[in-house]
Length: 204
Image 1 (cartoon, helix red, strand yellow):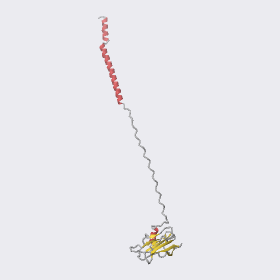
Image 2: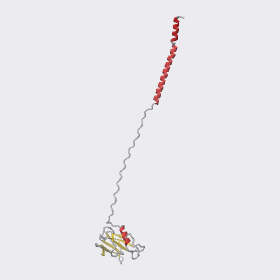
Image 3: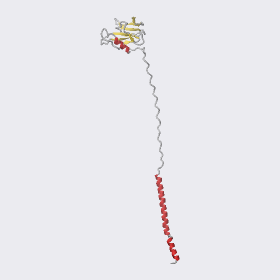
Image 4: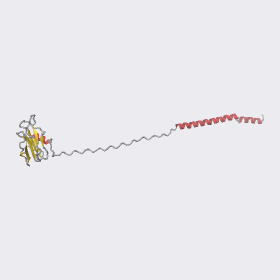
């Protein structure tokens, strides 16, 4: 075989044909396109999966409660009782009545709650009227006298039969006691503290 013919045959075998180039080119383009699609798909997936930033609303703050109103101060304590005021509920009265001898008419003791009086701790002489502790229709009554609030147990004239204290005629050292006389009229007898004891000073 001539040398030129051999060379041509070799060239034909070594140089790819146009069809081969077309197929190669198409394959390369297809591979590149596939790679591009994969890249885009991966990028889209990444973008889709990336969380979007969110804005959290700040919680609403409520206004602080108003301060509590000031507590009003307590009322002032009541003033102390006036020791010089008339006090017919004084414990000294009940104690004195319990020490009295029995009523000579009923032989009963005396009811400790006065029916009248002007007892106070400041008077030189004050008195209360008590009645016999009996259910009789007209129980006996008597006066009980006090000096500066203290019971006077002795040295007192007979005080049976008195039924009230006439405060209009009584003073700091004098007590005017009322009674019903034999004519059924109200009369008054005055007693005075003389510095040492009680004395009768006359009728009113």
